[in-house]
Image (cartoon, rainbow, N blue to C red):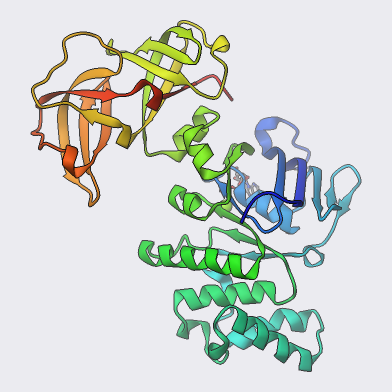
Amino acid sequence: MSSEGRPVITIRGLTKAYKKGATAEADLALKGIDLDVMEGEFLILLGPSGCGKTTLLRSIAGLEQPTGGTIAIDGQEVFNGAGRIHVDAERRPISMIFQSYALWPHMTAAQNVAFPLQCAKVKRSEIKTRVDEILNKVGIGHLGDRYPSQMSGGQQQRLALARALVVGKRIVLFDEPLSNVDAQVREQLRYELVSMQRTLGFTAIYVTHDQTEAMELADRLAVMSLGRISQLDEPQVMYDSPRDIHVARFLGQSNEIRFTVDAASGSTVTGQVASGDVVSARIAGESAASVRSGQTMSAFGRLADFTIGAPGSKGTGPAANDWPGTIVSERFLGTHWEVLVNAAGQQLRCWLPPEGHMGYSKDTWVTVHVGMTALKALSEDTP
Ligand code: ADP
Ligand code: MG
């Protein structure tokens, strides 16, 4: 779904200190989060372990009390650090789905779904109707009498969704729900989850540290680093234009070539790798005016954007982005060959289409090439 329309959750300046009275920025698990979550969108929080994803999710759900800032749902504040507002989790229109779904094993599917309604003191006659209705909606109406252990992974996921949505919650938070699931099954579950979300129309915030999962699921993607949101964009935009070096590194699947700047003009920067090879790249994430001669930058290029010349074609001059090197290894990965080359002072990974692959023996001299516009230069200094 699109991220246009109105925000359903609005977060401003959110901070969280687990240590009582901690004020030093280094001690904050959340360092001032600003975030708008749009109605009906699938928003992904992506970042390395410890960057604050769970803390943010639990703060939104009301399971954790932040230290400062505000959270509003549908324009109503549910948390305000200064105004001492903290609405209980049960009174927020939010459900949370944890790792492995946390279904109750001793209850049937229907009993699992009925439980939140019983807690909400819904009349018995109405419970039955609502349970049947939601189980049908998620496509497991015929499995009400089964126990979770008698259901497939996909059916369990549907059950978890039914239980999350049955009391009328419109926002579902997921904290790495698939991290214990086999890779193959996980792909299927992801696919089903997105299709369920489209059908049922809830707003989803989904935490993961898996880039592939993030790219597949996200309408928009927030990359977190050290208690901050480094960048929030659609996956494609993020991939093409990472704002800083942390985002570029975390999105992975690229070669990072560190170099010292010689000159910058317009949107292009040129410099030298420690090995003496010359790099020319497009400046990303900041204006050329702030790039200084002598500073360290990293050029990021997708693995598929590197090409390798014919064996034996050891380059002669220091041409930009034409680096002589030796073959380390090669292997076929189904859709492409991955060839490792020692060049530009490091080991580069190159993904070659089957037709562009010539069979390279170990230690053969070759020239690695990458286009200037395919390299994005980011500075190490950005926070
Ligand atoms: P993530 O989910 O991205 O792995 P968390 O939100 O769990 O990260 O943790 C963010 C930071 O807060 C980490 O430094 C972590 O050690 C700390 N932290 C998380 N929970 C607690 C807690 N209950 N008490 C103290 N520190 C915590
Ligand atoms: Mg976590």
